Length: 232
Length: 117
Image (cartoon, rainbow over all chains, first blue to last red; front, side, top):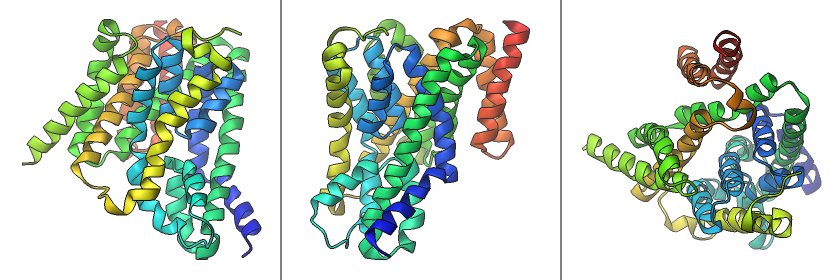
């Protein structure tokens, strides 16, 4: 299989089932971006920069509320630390391409949950020397679908009746919440979800702009400690 | 088209988004690619990180539902809370099906809005 062929075969991930589920949540992100006052260009820039739906919403939310750049960067960074172990897990499949090492640093931009899961599933079936390009194709394909869905959600939010826009907006938080419950592995994960839900509303009233950061650090740490304590 | 407040308006918003977005998240991916072999993905540090990350996202979810903006603000509190509860219940009832949970929760939002406002 040539590199070119591997790339184009990778782009077919655009239509994979996990990607289609992702696009449904992204319609909600597009609608949300419009509601909080982002331009269409800004709404499209976030998925390109971040490749992570929850982080995109966290950042759009901080920007819209005029939070400090540092608070926003810290909150985004904390939601993105999970990419480190994810990258570690997929790296063995992205080596052995015969090209320079920095190619790997470019391709890992597409380490985000949907493409990552598809990658772990599909990469082992491809010859080692084209896997990197194959993954690049998968990332590019899903990004194309992501941008189309973002634009669709953004434009639809302004064109449909308000009850429909509300439904579109509601799918996003619901998808986040259920996806987190679905992928929770440890007790700490479950406690963290509950702690986040309970802490965020008072934190928003007491410390607007830093509420998500405080919720994450305090709620997450308590959940982690509680998870350790319950286990021992 | 409204513009974003303060520092977020710089360079059409693209520069702050690049800094607080790309520069805040991408180094974790680079670290995974470069030094990943020496790290244990199952260590307690990552369990803590997952918990903090989950709490941030769960907190965001709670805030969107409790303090909604825009079109969602037109739905009353009982409607929003009821729809969330029904969505979660449907998710578990259909053996942790994401599709069933989201679909039922969204339909519940529209139904409750028609009944409760």
